Length: 143
Image (cartoon, rainbow, N blue to C red):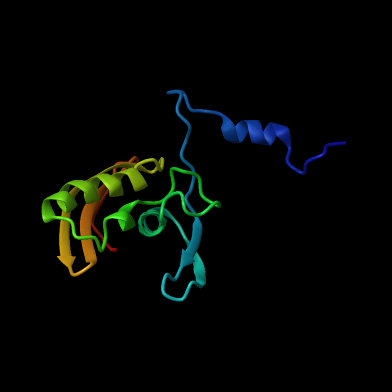
């Protein structure tokens, strides 16, 4: 009698790798979150799920919430609202966003950052290359 409802053979099949030796990336279905109300509004997948991951990873402070590991989240709030030069913002914001999102296995890279500053708010627009070959252009986040 098994102590778990999971069939070990099925679990082994899920963990197998393809011929090239890399794990196959599965579907990215997740709940659609309304960031303003905090409500769940259905299910999303593919590009929309990646865009939501990017938004949530950048909005979440790194190492502040025990539910997330140390790789999840962003450290942008450490420089937002502080009296830092535009040159520092131009260097640090892309680095911090890349660190927040590029560990996800669906994301290859982030590039072409455009940063607009308005008081203590930033509007950041950039492109994201996915591992499936797609490029999401004009990804925009407000922090």
